[in-house]
Amino acid sequence: MADIAFLLLIFFLVSTDIQQDAGLPAVLPPLESGANASVEPPALAVLVASDGALLVDEAATPMSDLDEAISGFLQRSGAGSGAVVDLSVPRDLRYVDYIGVYDAAQRAFNQQREAYAMARWGRTGDALAPAERVALNEAWPRRIREVVRE
Image 1 (tube, helix red, strand yellow):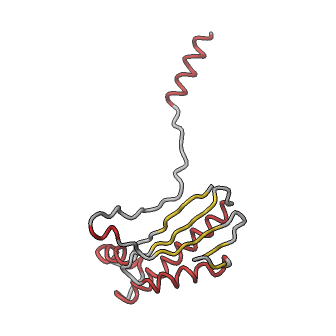
Image 2 (cartoon, rainbow, N blue to C red):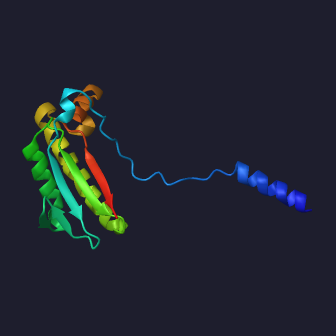
Image 3 (tube, rainbow, N blue to C red):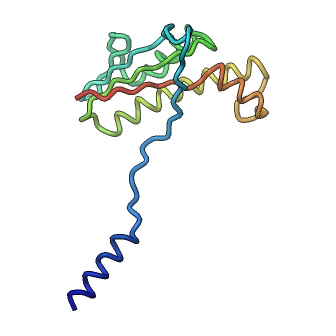
């Protein structure tokens, strides 16, 4: 009886598929090498405290103004600058606060991408042809770096 139970246990351990959390999908920028690799793109530092308080380039900023702060930085940097938003978050940050900050950065990039698409092609990003989408992705790549602090 014990040998059958052991065989069943082995069977289920081998045949069971254990799913792992994939996290948030993010496309990372390619690693650059050569002469241009030493030039740092403009970066906006967003520091999030454990209680959800925000510092944007060392200035206290409420969550309601984060979209505008990131959009303003991206607009000042301009298309093709490779602007980066650096998110520095503590490990014990509440998930809802992290998602709020990450979504604000995504919204700011999307706003700049849509404005660029309307100015250049007269259409929104969803209505662009494949070649135009490639050009849009090259002009306004979503570059969000994340650092998790202890």
